[in-house]
Length: 406
Ligand SMILES: Cc1cc2nc3c(=O)[nH]c(=O)nc-3n(C[C@H](O)[C@H](O)[C@H](O)COP(=O)(O)OP(=O)(O)OC[C@H]3O[C@@H](n4cnc5c(N)ncnc54)[C@H](O)[C@@H]3O)c2cc1C
Image (cartoon, rainbow, N blue to C red; front, side):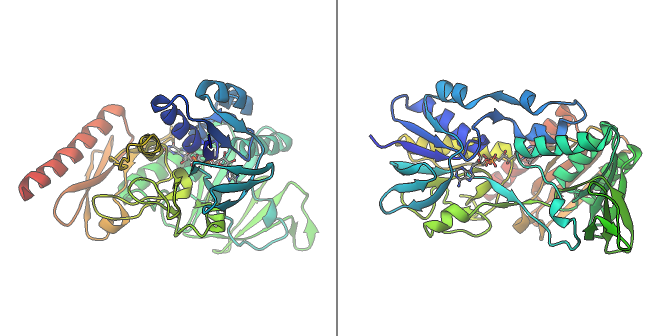
């Protein structure tokens, strides 16, 4: 019997495997992964320095344990290079394999900014536990309290900044926007975060970008582990480590070997199926289709992975199932000012408005669409109780709108 084959052992690959095994205990499952297949919670990577966590402490199960627990065969350190969707065959660094159904859970790759300078190639980024290990070793090799410049003040950049500052390092955050978290949060929430991060000692260089990263200043070598980061606004920053957190881009390379339709992600329909027969995709590599309005978001977060994995597992077991995403708050894990937010979808954001309730203690912003339906919120600092109340308010607003139409 040909196996159901999953490419990728991140949250997406392992969750779909687990969900499938709850429904079907006999069909063979093959998981192929380019890494060692250890299971870890990726969100912990940006909260691990303050707790001085070793990489091994983040990995809760190794591949052998995962294989036993799920009832799957796992091929570690194996790269899938090509898909022949007509023959239902994949070519890998360990040979060819036939599949009955294929699930692409290949994740995303960090975006590399085109930056000039003779040290631009040494900029680090963290998208998996191996990257975390490299960053940790680089920091340790520089000393106890070092200077770290982070490019990008989005969710991940702000989380690393807060975490590394808590661990005692001198952090500078650089971002082209006027405020941190600008792509996700309304202004008052971003301002609250900015204030908290500055109180933590983080220096903000906003409204500018890094133009060059060098080991040399005026022709003089300043040492292999010392960088000068030159900004477009004319400022310069001395740094021991430069970390890029400017975003991720869905990994489309494998899908494109089979001419599977892609845009910002691997395009899937409302059931998670790609344009190729029997090939599904989910997680950071996927671009979903919302059944209710046909919008096509990339959703690089854990909650959508869980929802998509459950639906795809059902479809794989024979019961074709729609993926129904529910609004789930994203938590920005900045202990200096934790934030919860449901960002309005881009196609809704243009026609709506934010309303702010700013007490000075807790700042709440609600987003309303053109029909006055609450379609998002942000709260800083967030707590579970306020978050749940805002979510309930959003659901009540949506239900009221449906009743009005009926
Ligand atoms: C630092 C950080 C903090 C985050 N914090 C949060 C948070 O607080 N909340 C939240 O909701 N989300 C958070 N996220 C996002 C969330 O972690 C991701 O959305 C999720 O982990 C993506 O899982 P994935 O399985 O799709 O991709 P990945 O984890 O990237 O897994 C991809 C897998 O595919 C394998 N692979 C790729 N190509 C091939 C190939 N050709 N052949 C074989 N194997 C291949 C890789 O080896 C890997 O095993 C965070 C992300 C980061 C980086």
